[in-house]
Length: 62
Image 1: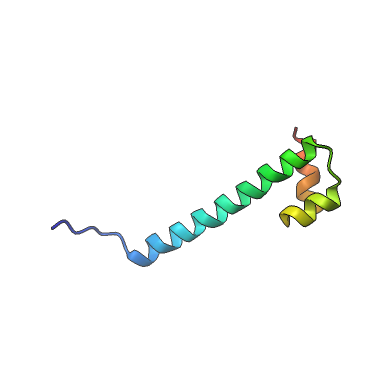
Image 2 (image 1 turned 90 degrees about the horizontal axis):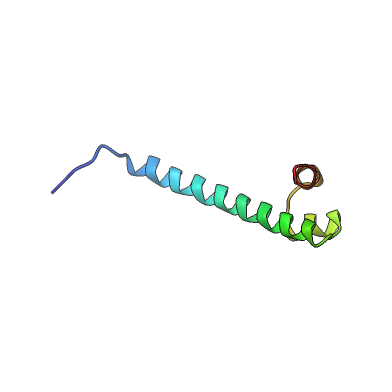
């Protein structure tokens, strides 16, 4: 049997952080798609939960 020095709590924390980051990236992708469809910023905010500042930054960085 092989033992590792990885603390299970640290591993679980890393997995949780990865999920949060993935969810955020998904919201950003949806916002970009909605911007491409010329959706209103308020609608994008409601659909993604992103702030208007985040959405405006995405729009500016096309």
